[in-house]
Image (cartoon, rainbow, N blue to C red; front, side):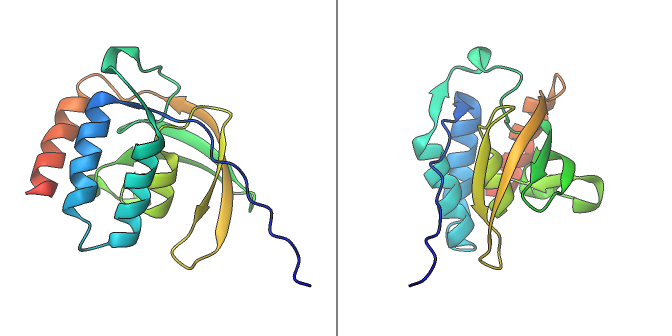
Length: 150
């Protein structure tokens, strides 16, 4: 008999209304280019609790948030979740249109989630801390989203 693979239930997530709208459009626009990641992002958005922008807590991962996480491989990283046009792995800017980016949206400090890397391996990460985006980042993000979706 093959060993039983333990699966974890996905944690409850919260997404701001503006992130929900922008990310839904972005995922749909990229569905033909990268259907797997686009589908993962849409799936996360579908299960999220959507709240008004002024009701989102600072410790919830949203677009532009900087967060620290620890992986099951012992990796301790600090990254910023960004739109595809802003992504730069060398500076810690991770695109929402990556498997790990889609997994992180809506998580809060202390929550863990399993995510599948592009090579198919399943990893578990735990969010240790979240820092809200700087004031004015939402306007920049909306602008970047518009350019990316066009």
